[in-house]
Image 1 (spheres, helix red, strand yellow):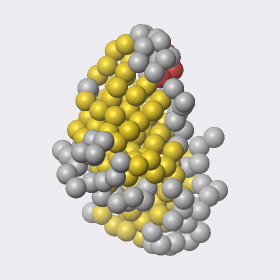
Image 2 (cartoon, rainbow over the protein chains, first blue to last red):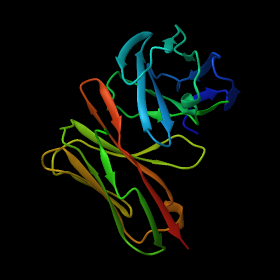
Image 3 (cartoon, rainbow over the protein chains, first blue to last red):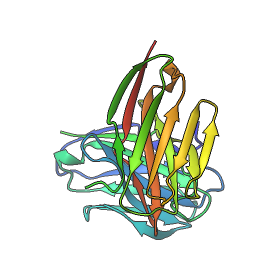
Length: 114
Length: 109
């Protein structure tokens, strides 16, 4: 158990809909990272938050947004969903702000867009 | 285009054999990490290498960081079925973090 909690584990929705994925980092970790993993693209970095502030942005679509709350949990919002958004979404957390710091990954949320 | 290319993409070997996985890039990284991911789980960090030419050993796993800090390799000696999984290299440059294309390893008993 990495100590990072992601909910829900599975999500099935329709195209055009909006969903919210939730992540609780390890106790004491200030950074939260979001990743998308698909068969054709591999594991892609989406966005990082550090202590409530956006720290780095990767390949995140404009239809996607995220935030980190004062209690350090984070949410990833995906809107106007398309079939191609079906993927595993991982959250990771680390103590410090650098992306090369040790990241602990949650078990992921499997999103299926039908 | 992936910043970190891994080879081979798939590897199926018999228990007891040795293997090497490569992670190559045209970019320089301040550090490289290797992760292993099992089905239904998130990646788990195996090692971080930070110095060009560095070699780290973790039991039967040997990790090497290239002198120019653009590439890395993972060598497994006497592979066991428990080594089965997806191996991912990853590197940070600036404030961006990139994962490799992955190597799916199957060790057959």
